[in-house]
Length: 98
Image (cartoon, rainbow, N blue to C red; front, side, top):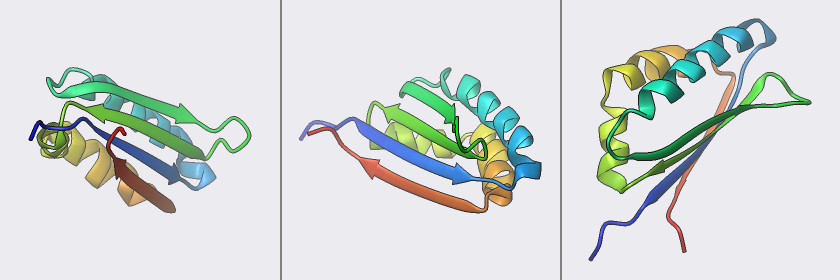
C-alpha cells in the first residue's frame, strides 16, 4: 500500500491578552515547518471577525512526515510549550484525501 498524504486541521482560541503572542508563535511555526522535507504546505490564519481564533491547515507527504514534524524542536517549543499552553480551546482533526 502506498503512503497516503495526511492533512491536519487545527483550530485554536486564545484569551484576548494572549492572541498577539499566539500569532507571533504561529508565524514562527509556519516558517520553521515549511523547511521540513515532508511538509507540503503549512498555512496559518487568524479570524477576521474573531481575532482570538486561529486556524492551521497542514499537509504532509505521509503520516511519517507528520510524526517527524511533531518531534522537531520547533514544534515542541512553539506548540507543546507555547500555543497549546496558552490556548483556551484546541480542536484538531487528521484526514486523508478521498
